[in-house]
Image (cartoon, rainbow, N blue to C red; front, top):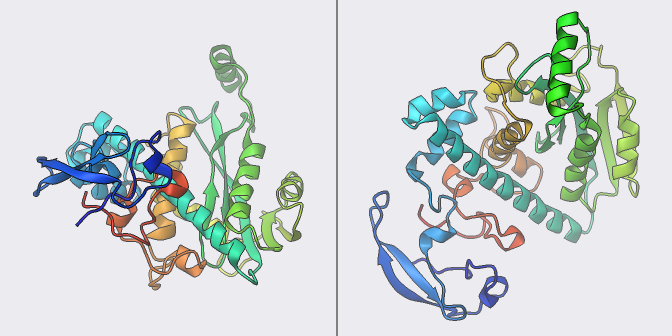
Length: 352
C-alpha cells in the first residue's frame, strides 16, 4: 500500500519534516490511463489534498504509458518528428513531453550525484578522481553563423558522464563574403554572439568536483588547448592535480590516451540525432540541446550497461550505485524537491 513520504506543498510544515500520520486517506479517483483507482489523501497540517500520482514524474501527463518509449527512441538517435510518428503523437505534444521527461531525468541525475558526493565525504580513504575532458562542436539553427561547443567530462574507466554542457561560441574558420554577410545579419538581429565555452568548461569540471568532493588527488587528461590549465587550477585549487596533455593531432584509435573521451563523443553523435554531421536534425536553441544531452547522460549513467558485454552501469563501476536502475524507476519518483526527493534506489516507485 502506498504511503505518502511527505506533503507535496512546499509551504506546509510536513514537507520538510513529515511526522508519522501527517495525512489521512481522502477517497480516490479513476483515470483512463490507470486500471485501478488512484487513492487521494488530505494533509492534516495544511488541509491540502493530493493523490498518489502527485509523487510520480508523470503527474499531469497525457498518455504517460508512452514515456518509456519516448526515452528509448530519443536515446537511440531517432529524431523528434520520427519519434512522434512512431508513438503516434503530434510533433508539438512529443516536444512538450520530451522536455518534461528531460527535466525530470536531469534532476534525478543531479540528485543521485549529490547523494554520491555525500557518501564520498563520509568515505575514510577516497580514491583519486580520474577524469578526461574534451570539447566538440555542433551548431544551432545555422551552421555557418551559430556554432556551439560542448565540453564533456567523464571518468575514463567507468565511462560515467559528469557533464556535457553546450555553450555558444563565435563563428570562426574560413570567412567567405556570403558567410560574413550572414554573420552581420545575425548580429544586427540578435547582437554580437558571445563565447561562453570557458564558463561551460568550468561548470563541467565543477560538476565532477562536486560529485567527488573528498578526492584529494585529481588525474586529468585533456588535449593541449591553452585555456584548460587555467580552468583546472581554478576548479581544483585545493587539490593535487596531475594534468596530462596530449596533442590532438596524434592518433585517436583504441589504446590511445584520450580514447575514452573521444569514444564518448562519438557515441553522443550517434545517439543524439541532432549532433550528427550533415543531418537534417538541427537544434533550434542551445538550451533544448542541453536538455537532450542531460536526458541521454542520465539514461546512460544509471540504466544502460557500460559496454555491451558488461552487466553493470557506469554508475556502478564508479561506485555511485549498487545496481542498475530500471527505466520505470528512472521515470518514477518526482525529483524536483532536491535532497528531499525519494531516491529510486531506496523506495519502490509509485505506480505511474
